[in-house]
Length: 347
Image 1 (cartoon, rainbow, N blue to C red):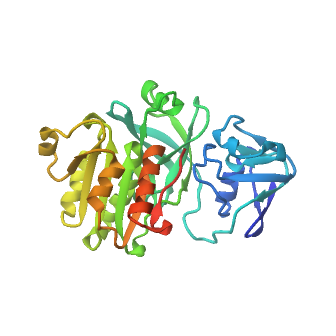
Image 2 (cartoon, rainbow, N blue to C red):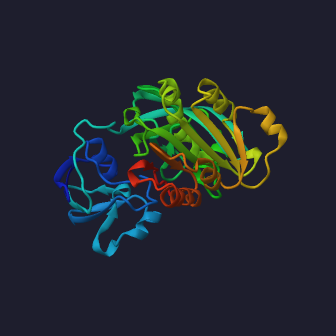
Image 3 (cartoon, rainbow, N blue to C red):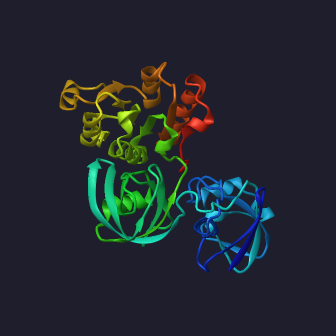
């Protein structure tokens, strides 16, 4: 079906499948539509229907609170065209023309499910076709029996890969995370759309890296660090990684962090911040290459990074309160311009 869009960047057209949401249809056709979460929570992909009819997939999507449905406003990620239609999108929209990684559909099998902590699980999705993505990007997953789609950052980085690695934190009443913990997801079929996201790593930008993450927000940071180490980026650039969790029982990837620092001991440093307890002597002894601190991760970052923000590109991910605290610190204390701060808003 033909979809016409009127935007601040001009008028465009794209084809949408009969059962395809309008956001994914536009993105896979190379149109740089506005979005952040791509799953119905943030309200960024707002549009108005001028002609034709659309159907909402999820009438209770939290992001709908940001639109005026009485004026035929919709969320592109939650709407399907019922025929040819015309939309107005209040954003600067252009065709990518080969720039970036054009997202598309894949199918995959869930494998290597492993419980990392009491409320964090890791798993792989083995795809039916290779996917190329920028380090720091995410994909949207959908599985049978769980209503809705979920956005998760890739942990791994490898060009043109058929394996995507993820970590997911269990949330209260989180249907997908409950399914991962309580069902037997091994071998389940997953529908995948991606890559998505703007919190991406590009070595040609030639900047030192600051990563501030809480909980499973470390996923995209691991992808960035993996590429940086694999490409030798940290031979000539500094990397500062701050990972916040509540207690020592909640921390994971310590062995991976140790290996990263061992490879670049003079350029890469990793600090784990425990917000709810003091750091034990045993933990410090077990992982001598990692720094440990007590406090909220954005506060620990503020203390450790004072005077070290020259030529820095910062990445932030984690629970919304943690992200908000880190962003305030980076803007008000570090005085970083917005162009030097990257994050994707999942909720």
